[in-house]
Length: 110
Image 1 (cartoon, helix red, strand yellow):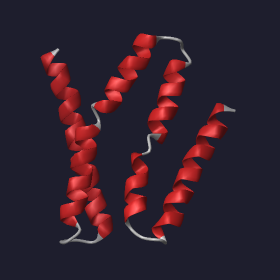
Image 2: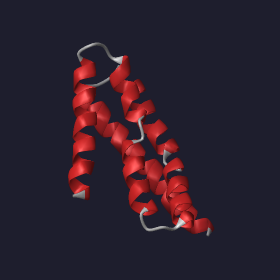
Image 3: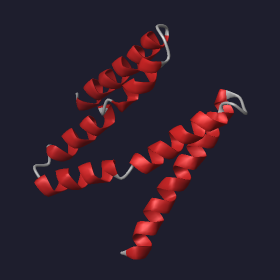
């Protein structure tokens, strides 16, 4: 049953983004900031009953902000030079590079 409600939340958010995109461009860009996946992840971790685990998951989520900013930055600057699908591909590559640097950089210093 947990998977069903998580799928419903994700589906509703996706439908809301599509519906709002018909009214303009700003709201669909802001809506992904709603922490849908963070809420789901923190509910799963919180259900285990460990406050430390919950805090660790929240901190791990906060560490993804630079990768998200890299993704959005590449999207913003690339769209003037290429098709949106290619811009998204390059942005995903930038996200992966930042995540890899953060992941492997943290391992090197620990």
